[in-house]
Length: 198
Image (cartoon, rainbow, N blue to C red; front, side, top):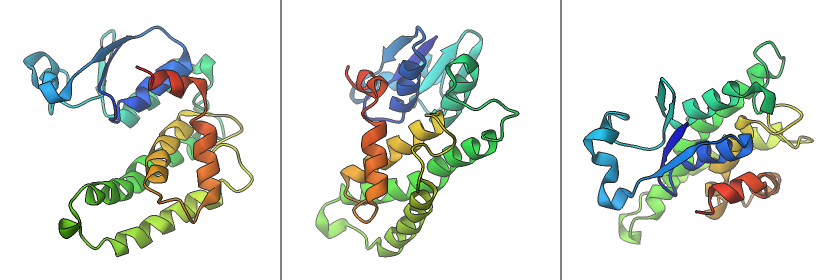
């Protein structure tokens, strides 16, 4: 199994998941500044030359959430995804995709805007209000829960925590102390420490 990876990208999520699974894999680091992701060989794996890409035998996948869903199901004995017939399966899929589809674009919009010089920053107050609504939904879900979709850590927590971690570094969680606690708890896991170590 091979993961094409660059630091500080969405590729960190499947790498974290592989570390949680504790299965053998080869890490192929690409230097984006040298355009190592634009080689013909990599473009054959991903049409836009992005990361992550997972190659598992005859299976080649791109898109971080697809890889995470695939890996969690690929190793059911590791219990990072509820079984298909489980009552926890629906909420697991919902919250993983909610994090990716609803939460992440709002966080990234704030992040990209913050990278601009002050005179070029847009007024994102409406988007910030929408982000606060989304964070409130997650906050409510985590009331009395350690994990977002079941009684134990799953790939849904991994994806959600990775996005909330970025939001927390930008001080977007200041009104949601429960989400700060959730992020701190999930990002203390040994697997994520290994995933970002090198």
